[in-house]
Length: 113
Length: 112
Image (cartoon, rainbow over all chains, first blue to last red; front, side, top):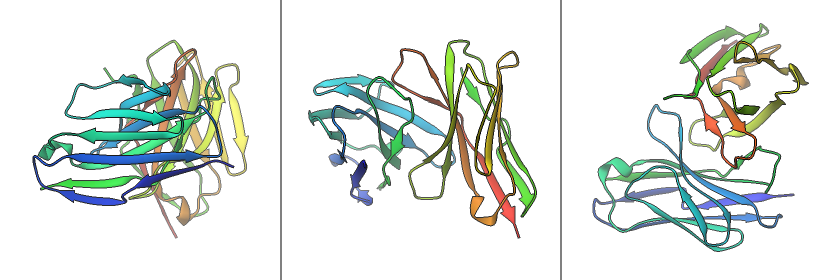
């Protein structure tokens, strides 16, 4: 069976500091990978997705970037955090070519102070 | 432009009764629809899905209905249980696309 891991679970960072959130998937090969953000009281906003190593699509222009250095590893980064980057960050995966269900990790609560 | 809309931010239901959560969409290219359940501080959990070639899909206490002409789908939970209290997200996908479009969610509260 497949498992998705995200860490850290919570993070408090000062404005202007860098960020690195990591996500890994086990039990499948060549998954589609996704980063979402849920701001307080809001829905799920897709930030980035990847259909293969080194292939990153950005959905929203912002202060963040993503990388996929290995098949089942997805990293969300920022060079300098803003207050508006606070939120609940979720990584998800799906099978390549369908079905379309996405499976989510446990999330990272990021607070920028 | 919101392509997937969940117009009810919240819903309260008594235990044992039916919960009906609604979702509307505007994009005619959507052909696959999903419902997710989310508890606070956790990732969403996939519940049930339906393809546009069907109008109903059932899994235990959960049934999803799709009305393509009205661009409307609904999730029925029968009977509702207190453990069903969570935020429910509707999502949709278009053929050939790798992404999902989510609604803003409906918070369901099931009281004993």
